[in-house]
Amino acid sequence: MKLTLKPAILIKRYKRFLADIALNNDDITTIHVANTGAMTGCAEPADTVWYSTSSNPKRKYPYSWELTQTKQNHLICVNTLRANQLTEEALLNGTITELQGFDELQREVKYGDENSRIDFLLRCNNAGNKNKPLTYVEVKSVTLLEGNQGYFPDAVTTRGQKHLRELTSIVKNGDRAVLLFTVLHTGIHHFKVAKHIDEKYANLLKEAIDSGVEVLVYKAKISPESIILSEPMKIE
Image 1: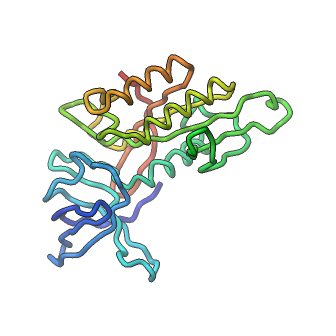
Image 2: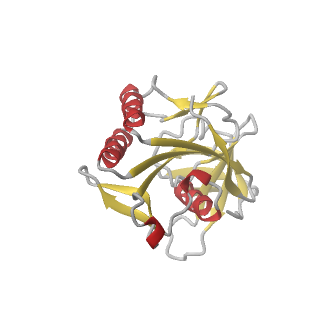
Image 3: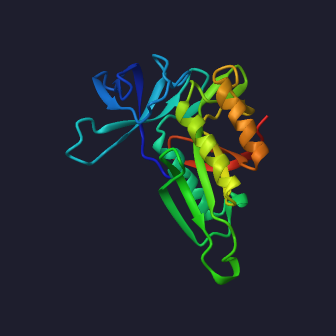
């Protein structure tokens, strides 16, 4: 994924979807934040913000926060919309080798007993694969770094807990369920589930894995010019 970004200095994030930044000419402006999460460690005042610019004249805030460059010089993709875009790109170009051989890719498909939407549904339509199960792929962004350890989630996530229950049901019904963690922080080299933050999520994940839900972890290469999912990692 190619990017065209400009740098600024973060003043503060507020109201979840907004942040104030200081531009290179010292003007102060407000930008949109496409991230509803806690953004722990990703939004410290005086960090460098890399932002994109929309050409849509109807937008109230034309700038969007894409990357954070921390004081430790780590780059973090904070725009949560990018995780699915990067995943689709990696699915189509063959990077995610465990998820190949599909004929059709659908996005945001309704499924499950708890009114969920799966990020990607992969189908095999050709005659040779007609008996191959559907593959349900749920994507999560990993951006929390504590010490030298990366974690997910960065806060209690009832939505994430629901997704684990739904994925477990998918496997029990005979189809394939995959949970894909996309590591969008250049400082993360080791990854585990944050049981100390959301013990219920950690327990549900263990139950899901024991039931046959597959877990994949892929790390992104990040720069102000591009982001790509490229490097498989292990979950510890």
